[in-house]
Length: 318
Length: 318
Image 1 (cartoon, each protein chain N blue to C red):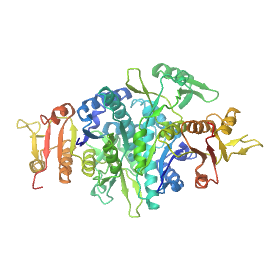
Image 2: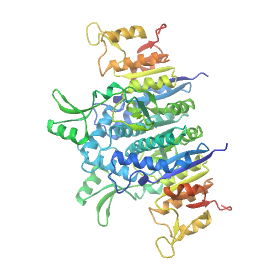
Image 3: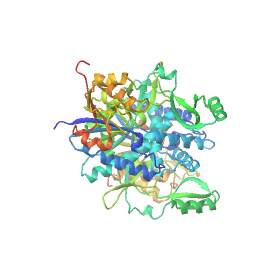
Image 4: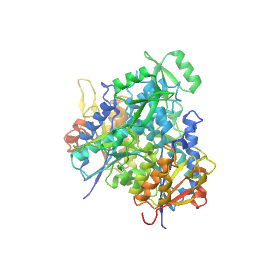
């Protein structure tokens, strides 16, 4: 039997409904619901890697670090990402175990704390742009910038907020282990929150860095490195659209990289929303990738049959 | 070349010096120092699994959950254990990468979020005994017991504290994946804090449970299941002693399970200290285990040459 290898990137909201508070029970329930919707990919003919965002979760962890800072030293952002990989891995493992047993699939699931190499020369380190954590008053911000060497920016209405660099992923350190494990038939959860950013310094030592890696780009990087047959990026809408939310809105079904790149250059996709997903898809297809699907989790079963979602294939001359 | 498979159980203090506050930098430094002391086991002829305690770390996470509880729902104890597996896995992975490169070993390191099956019928669930988290006043304790269904006990001097069950580990769910990975030459970090306790309910579903598994016993269980050649339990002292801290104190060098069981029954080993380590050693040797060493990390290199530490071998009639 030929096994197809899928990498599926879940949004952070797939595991914490923004309308909910984020209790353990709510997150366990969301994780199990998400795993149930992934059921078509659990069949023995597929190999499956699951990656995920961690926006709301790492936000909560950060807030806890700050609110308890008089008693417990707040840990670095990279450590908070690793903690969210732990908690979310636990939720997904629980949900997945239950779904696997319900469908009588004899497979196991494992979560890997994933480190991702970033380049110290990445221009992102010169202009930190990704907001993280809570909002502060100008006075609090002055203090934090002095005490913690944070870089902070003022948001038009809501106050001051820390910004960190968002460098490009160079390589997932644990890629070989992830590939080995998945080829053994296990379902692997990894690259949570885009992975923990790590730099290799000129003296050859490794150093963790307070930054955030885009989870779709990190997933695309991993998918290329482990030669996935298909990268699925799950988002809030069933299709990538051009002229989104205008009377000319048009859902994209099957597109080539050439067409999609043209739409990207024309500015059809919103920063921080569909744009990074489209960029991740194009990155993967420019790096040995074969197929990318962008859709929402509800459309996934039909998308796997080619009847829903946006399907992107490499333009033959690429 | 014949590869020997070692499981090494680190104490939680190996990664957070009780004299330090627990900043990221301190924990990174402790982790790298610990990994450097493990260097003799990183040679290509050894396969290595590292497990670890998480006492001070999960204590800090718990405290953060409580101090921030007005803003962020506190997550369950099992989730906090998974978070500590994330943070400590990150620290150990960083330290290990640096030590591996410094010694020019071309190996990788991976952390697995580990779930451990416990038995719902375990008598520990009838009498929760393991204290976790902070101390509270009687009034606060009344409120927490009512609101969160916590079981709390009064400590002679320091106030009220939550107690949770400490059930025996039945099986490490991810044992097959850990074995696969380690046989590929990767160093695997797992069973942090004894693992995340999970029950299999009569309806065959899995449910996480707020409990704490003894990390030495969980490590011994894993070591038996993956047929380790040697289990090393690292602690604060170079040897197991009888008549500890009395004029008759005697360090144990090489002992059989029969001798050690006799000492255990005579009450030589302190509850919550050496006793669980001795019990873990005896458990492993009664379950197909071959060799157990109990020592401190500083003595490890000499212990591997048989010149330090307490070495326990199966009594032939066992």
